[in-house]
Length: 256
Length: 326
Image 1 (cartoon, each protein chain N blue to C red):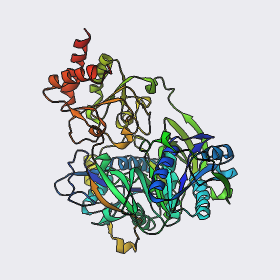
Image 2 (cartoon, rainbow over the protein chains, first blue to last red):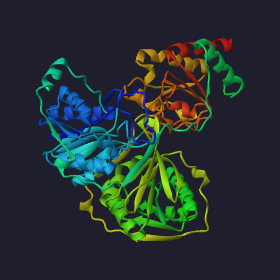
Image 3 (cartoon, chains in turn blue, brown):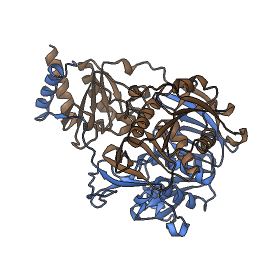
Image 4 (tube, each protein chain N blue to C red):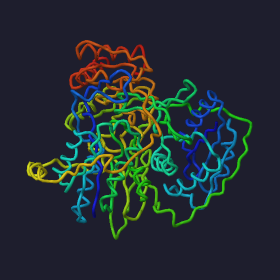
């Protein structure tokens, strides 16, 4: 089973975000980046399916030069090849525009299965997998918690809301968006990291792929959200703050 | 201008978020002078359509077909594409449910259009609608506007508009849209729905909840939080990553994929406050947040906050509670 897994690099969880005045993207200098956590689950699922059914895993990423690191992590964990759509202006694209770039790169592969994480921790559009399915003309399913492959078909456990699940079946090739928590992602081994250095990362551009996209939406600006609730911050040592809190909960909020 | 609201039902039961989206549409309509069409999709949805007609909308569209009895992304996309061609809306609004995430971007793309998903607010400004959504896990907000030609697709996060404030109307006309669907067009086969955990604990009934997040760092630290829960008379719960790791059972997960709760006291400990978590607890009467990051979005919804090391604060708080009891 040949699998393309889409991986994105996003700001590290604890990265302090700075927004230039009137900007639609954060200031990228001085912060760390990491593999988008939901994509880590998709990658792990791709590797497990390959180990079970054979074939290869291709890690595909769309973004600036730094995105190569996400591909390298995938290669170190066991992906065979990488494809990097190099683009410094990736953040100007709407979800459909980004998906068109990814779809064009996937069309060059002979993929039986395309996996994405559920959403990215930066833009958080949560649309890529579903859009890829439409653009590639493939069936899809999202929020997947279990995959069983047999005879060119997949039996999938989808998560619904409020603790409900559903089994669905669909034929390959297909696109799946993987829910976080489906597996325990492995760590890269030293051997894996060394082996990754010899693996190929093909570099493409939007122009190479012939993708032009008319934007359907535009982010006018991003900003730190205004507080809608007045939060009373309790200060002092841990003991002092704890005592103040108990006092407030008892006599002000009257909830204990 | 016309707004089409696509409601959601399963086996004849409304997803209540449908009415929040209807409220959003009524607000947009009041500002822009738009009319509202409300659609209900499925098989045998006549009674639901009639109920919908009791709200302040211009018309109700019943999108019915044998093959729409169970949700499939192909079935819903093909059916709604035809309903949109019929109704010719400028905007198409959805509740941001798991089902909508599964097909609405595809529906928009099949028409060459885009979708602004997961909106938390909307305002009318300079003659256009500005949609507000979150980015970076709630650390930033973004103002987004549509470009290009209608129809424009948007979905609204649960809890951002008041479903109980939807305006009633005088009985709108209901009409059916005949859709053409063939079994071979539907590639996914939906099978049974099921629940996994027996819900040994019903967090929705707990008056006090002590919830932990990533800040707890490792399972060995959970007893510390459990001690606090015991001292304050609450149930222990968690954000998704903790349950993904298997540190607490899934049935104790609060958020969009877990339980939605509104206790009198909710303590969020080491939880940053990503929207997926916040939607499950923001209705709580009093919210306390303990986090080392003063900029964590959880403080947006907290009534009381302590910025600092939870490994110092939680034991101090437990001791303080025990002291006040004795």
